[in-house]
Length: 197
Ligand code: CO
Picture 1 (tube, rainbow, N blue to C red):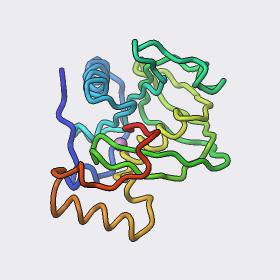
Picture 2: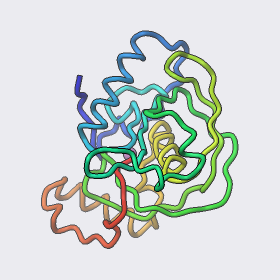
Picture 3: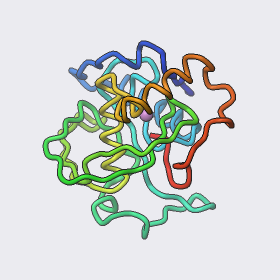
Picture 4: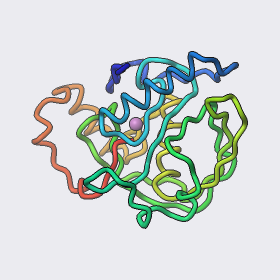
């Protein structure tokens, strides 16, 4: 089932999501709906609060694809290749962060805007999978960036909060004034290589 994606400035996106206490059949179905919604919107990650459910749960599929939809393995890091996709992470918790990297981030909740954001380059994450089993992930590359972006959603944060004060306010004021209309008029130097996270 396709779910409705909330967009900034919807106040639900600003709330802190609650941990999942017990993984149930309902979470299994919800993860399928989230993935269906993410793929239909051409995103590579989606967090539960983006579809109005304030639980700590995210879905991710950052595999690079060619025009036929086949995975392009050579564009993945060695650590990314070891992961099974799509990923469903419940109560994800970053235990270790190392080094810095930057990437042109977009977001399905802030459609049409892409900005360079700084994140940790390498992370180690503990979470539950959708079977309720404890898992540990070690990764870098786009997957590490995406996990950090999605966990921000669980804490009520958006990528536009991580920009300079001036840039952040410019985007927020623009959206509050014009909504997501006239997006073709938004100047964007960062659009070449980006993903909706
Ligand atoms: Co996002």
